[in-house]
Image (tube, rainbow, N blue to C red; front, side, top):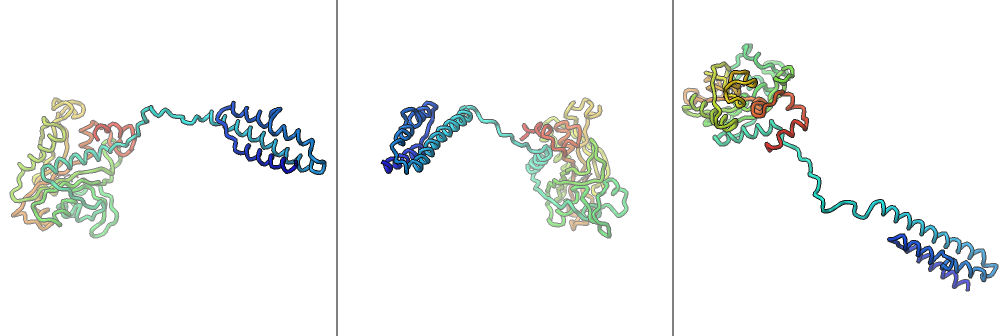
Length: 345
Ligand code: DAH
């Protein structure tokens, strides 16, 4: 009798342990089956009457443990069912279209730089680069800026070290002209994009860091007409087929003659508006025929070769193309500004 009963207790404990329910109804059935008036556990309590007095203590404890285990299991099943109801098995609608993943956009300066490079690539210009930390020789001296020449003041320089040939942050990408001529023999046709630095107060129209693209073409019998043609082709691709150019005489130490180039205002088509300040023209770059002294300094014979160079600010080109009014926008990384260029990807 006693051994039968203890076997039954173990059996029921195992059974109860294994119980699983997916519905409340099933849990209620379990309760009735084990703890109800005619339930299995209740029946054992009735049989307990017949247990020998010396065994009562042990069986009483085992029976109570069984009853508690059954009650605890039923509570646990109820709790897990409630929890499952709060978090349904599949809480999302799999047929719903997904949320679009937010993509970044390329920066307008990068877009413009790539476009300028692509246009000149078509004209046969290859890419050349040079260091941002430069020496005085490559930024000034080899470009025909004599020491103490007032033209140096045109570009307020950040110096890193002073001395005989000071180390500085390049103020223009014209330094890459020099580095290229030192390395290569003509014909040379390069486009040199890069970051430049000037000690300027930051405002809507000036920044201490900006980007330029330098162009250089050296060969036998390169003429001013070739310069004009190359720039005209470039502006038509960049700003539209109807764009015109105007060349004004200017001065740069490294070119002779020198010119500043304007394009017909792409907003008003040259009639005059507030963007072009009523003139119908917008300045876009400096250019000229490479000064013989510059060729000589880099080991190119000016009697055999001639060439032209030009330099433009990428921020300025992008401003004119997209009517950006304030240079500072480029450096703030405000996504609302950057998103405006999404369609230009
Ligand atoms: N380096 C000049 C500047 O930063 C721009 C420039 C003008 C570059 C004339 C040239 C050039 O190559 O021929 O203001």
